[in-house]
Image 1 (cartoon, rainbow, N blue to C red):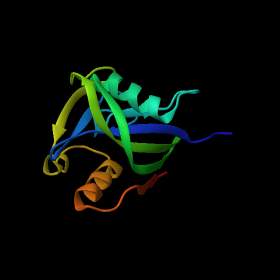
Image 2 (cartoon, rainbow, N blue to C red):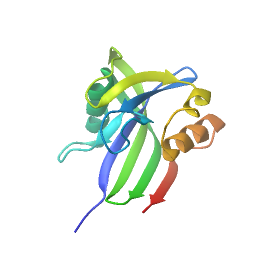
Image 3 (cartoon, rainbow, N blue to C red):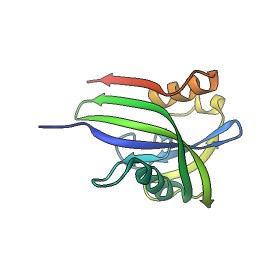
Image 4 (spheres, rainbow, N blue to C red):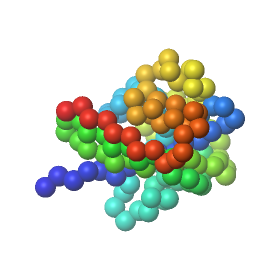
Length: 141
C-alpha cells in the first residue's frame, strides 16, 4: 500500500525577499522552490527542516512558525509538505546538495520565475497578510 511522503520546507525572509533554490533533480528539476525535502525515518520535523536547509543552502536555521501545509497529488506521488518560516542562526549562503543556485527574490521577481503554483500561492497569501497557516492543495493526475 502506497502512502503519502512527508516533506518540509524552510521559508527564509530577508526584508521583502525570500530565499529560493533551483532544484537540480526531479521532482521539479530546474524549478525554483523554498529549501526543503523529505523527512527521513526517525527524524523529527524540526530536524528535517534544519538538515534540508543546511544541505541546500549552507545556512543553519531554527524553524519558528508553521506557514503552510501543502498537499501535492501528481501521477506517481503524493506529498504532504510542512512549510515553516525559519530564522537564520548561522552559516553562509551557498547552493549545495541538490540546489543549483540559491538567491533571495522579491514577489515581483518570483512571479517571473519557474516556480510551482503552490509556492507562488503560499508567498502571495503571506504578502497579502492572510492569517497563517495556509492549506494549499494541487491535484494534477
